[in-house]
Length: 226
Ligand code: ADP
Ligand code: ADP
Image (cartoon, rainbow, N blue to C red; front, side, top):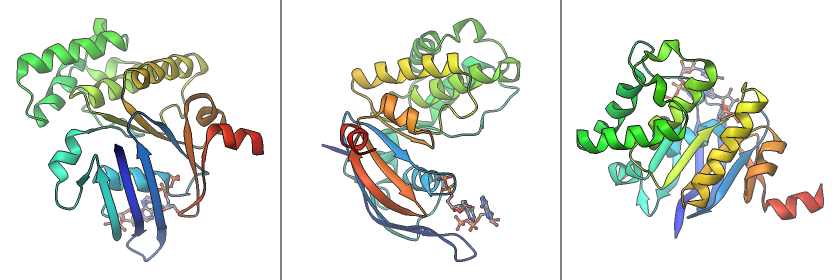
């Protein structure tokens, strides 16, 4: 099955600037997929549209067959999103941030608590569950973002530059965590401007530049051609 299908996606921002110039992209269920490209290439814009945080100008987006124009709620159930910026309430407690998110998906509180506990433990944040988020270190905040994105057990996890500004130790442990999620069946799509990161993690890579896909390739193929 296709986890994500994008057809002829275009985006012009207010001023008329064309950030996406016709993107075609398909990601298979179970894939570990990178959107690789320099800053300003359009990677975040693509993810923003998939998650319906940004309005597209034209084109089609389907998440497990659900068109985001006509079937957004169903599409969203399948998506967990980790944006670049920390956008939780810094004064809310770690545990509440994660369980509140589950509520947005209609998950009953007892289930939400179970799932929050599971992911906070997995991400090494369980001892911090009663702390307000502002007390956490930068690395912990990033892991909190991931726990929150996973609480409804989405089939696709989307991360925008997950390890930008992260120290090497946390980067390694995040890579290990993402690899384990992927082995257990979660489709992972991330953006990165580090070739190294795409290389270490991903099976398939689309290289984006100036709003276009300039290459769409498997990692194996890419490495033999560099
Ligand atoms: P949309 O077309 O999705 O409604 P807009 O074009 O209205 O988005 O842009 C949202 C806001 O972001 C505007 O106020 C715009 O000026 C501002 N903005 C302009 N350039 C940038 C940029 N390079 N990165 C982020 N925001 C920008
Ligand atoms: P990337 O994630 O690859 O760094 P982005 O998708 O953030 O790229 O940005 C693609 C292009 O669109 C850039 O030139 C950026 O300045 C522009 N852009 C992004 N957001 C806005 C906005 N809200 N308004 C106007 N321009 C924007």
